[in-house]
Image (cartoon, rainbow, N blue to C red):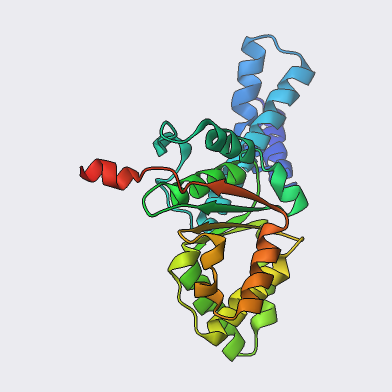
Length: 250
């Protein structure tokens, strides 16, 4: 290869790297050879090169968002049995996949008995949201409450809420299993109130709304919390779904 060609090759790689086009820098030579063999135009070669850069960026973004999310790795649509859900529930879940509900800060509440797939369904939806570029956080309600409670004790609750604000959607798993004292109830309510009409929350619970006083204790706080969660929401009523864990056990 002529020296000038070698220099151009090295210079082009360095230039692409300085422009933060690392995938292009890695692939341009191989794609150029492929383009020559297939007699592609300059525009077609450039398109293939740019497409490769985009695909690699999406791949890196998805990997980063998955690491940050805390999502359970095995709970996706591939492992979710939708066959025992009603057509209405299947349609509701299918409509959530495109993430349109996030634009209007709509919440999603999955209500059902233990073992019906509430958590799996919400995790599967969250995984699809990550694939289209939305940052989400999966956490048990108990873990989030303890995080916020520690922040409040350290006088940094606003800062912790700001960190959570970077997530387009926060999934609170098993809100019904948490029995809060007054301080815990207050930080949970503060979190829900802060996100109201700004960012979405997805919640799984085994308690119907009339039983949420077991979570928030105070009737007025319970009513206010339900109002903020339900005002703009999609309710997934899974109370009539049979437990798949009970099926497997039998």
